[in-house]
View (spheres, rainbow, N blue to C red):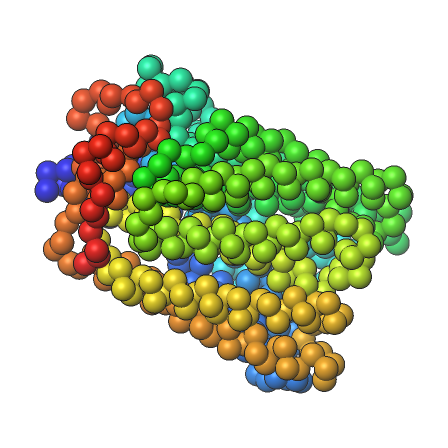
Length: 545
């Protein structure tokens, strides 16, 4: 238990203990856990808001929300999910915790900057909460589209300022990760010896660093417009609202890859471990991560086909949209090829990874429908877009987050959860997800617009059935969280390598020591070499507490 004490109970450098030793800590693992608790709080809140929205839509007419409250509910659901959960979840929690360990070092390059990033994240969350208790809940949606966002009397400025602060937290995290990988990886670790999760964080960090300033400047312009009426986006003053759309999506489409690239890195870590095979196409996956980061920054205007762009611009952005799908397809092919003829042992992390592959593929294929101008114009701003977005982001990033929790939970806490409950929760979440969003695809094809408080009678059956899917999904998420945290009360500890992994985090105790490594780690020539484990017959893993 010495390693547990050295990580969880060691006083801070200033001699503080208890909660103060956490609040002023520079240890990347403690900061990761503080992110985890905060992110889970925001996630549960956003899930409950989503449940309220779906419950309102289950029946025609007003159920229990006024139209104004409905608009505020989906705005806050979107702001919290995007800026407080999906964007920071994987990099801030698992990147902070495992990136230094995976590259053989004891911390990130800027420990104080890492703590500042967490405080900025918390400050952004507090400001978002303040917007709830001010006059007029924000009601613009998470995109803050002008001219509505600059003319509404609701408290949009506070929500915009919260997103502005969170942007700085994201940029500082990206800067820290890039510098850490360049400057602090083990001396004998070359670029092609990096684990794929680390590669995904590296590609993501560049997008965070280069794209986030665009949206922070844009959000400042919205606040300037609201307070000083300078006419940047207001057409009545000579401004151009389409300019806002370009600026917003120049960040927000690359942000999709900030959300999904770390999730892809998680899946690339999990699948070879439980297939007992080296990952298929390591270099191709590395190249595809970098290609997604680059090409994903060039397709922003496919959100704007109905805004009056020229035919040439529509053609170019449509073509680029189809091009950026290729690197994602390479990853899916590599994961499936890794599973082919592997010695597969099913576990909750692998099951959730398989759910990820299916749901993300649905999101990707429907994304091609939206990438083509013809069908895009037909289903633009309908529930088809809502279903596609959630398949990509929640079916992608959300399920990757669940898979990462179940994969690295034993390493982070030294406790194993109940496998049976984990499977039940995963089935509930996945089944509820499909039951929720498939009807929304159909509703979108039928023409039901999104963001509407009420709908025509022909859309009632689809909305009614979708509501049951949401209930199953929420129940599964609740069971999943209870199962994971209940494991902390058990006394069943786990060995350093409960799964049979081969990357460096599985060579240290569970949970890791304060400085990660008791001696300099041995860097393998290839990060996914399972030959020794397979030859030794190390195939049995715990069945769950």
